[in-house]
Image (tube, rainbow, N blue to C red):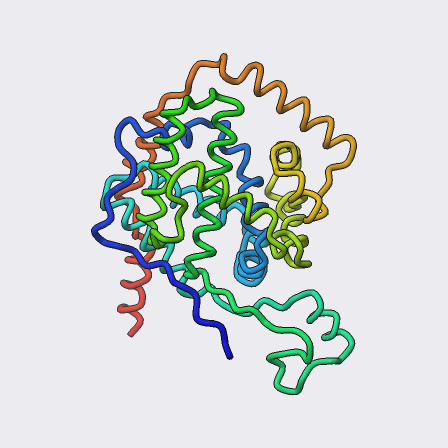
Length: 315
């Protein structure tokens, strides 16, 4: 019997905007140091085999890294710092991209049998293995990616800016939970509070599927040891060593992404320096991200409108 189809994320037009003027999430995202753990979040994402397959099969980050990074950062800033119309537009854009991201995951045993010519004629299933489909609308995958953002944002802020007190920790998680609902993740998939979230994260990190597929290992290495002529290698290295210094060691072991001695030492030094000195720097103006969104607003959707006009003109 086939397993039941996964629950799908669906945007709720009545979901309230999750971030207010005094939002802790906005304060955390506005800190430049948070961006230093982008690779960490990505590695956690692709530790899930279905997310890794989606990235491997559909992402353009290896061929067009700057444009891919720009699209991601732009959408994130509009979601977090935009008003209701801007944020909902960004969410709809993400769902539009996700409409085209689906396919099949093949386990490592399947790939081995593929190379040995041990595949059934229909190509859909091996004698002893099964395929697992994926969809970017799968709500359980959306919940996992959201969880990696919660954990990574909190790790960067509390490690290098300042720790949350108990009230702030609850408020931060409540905002992030509202953000998940705003993005269409069903409420019953979201841990009810910070303690339940810690349990969910631990359960995922010890799950057999996390970090154990060949595709997860390959994509994680592509992220951490990324090479492209337009991306300076020192920037990649800084992000890599900080990601490896802050990831759960069990995930590092499973993904087989252990740093070399030089990277290990650099990660320790950078982490210690950021802990000691970053919070002493003057805080960057929190108006910068909202100002970007304000200046960006007239051009939102311009590319799509231009393509529509060109399409009409060519008829």
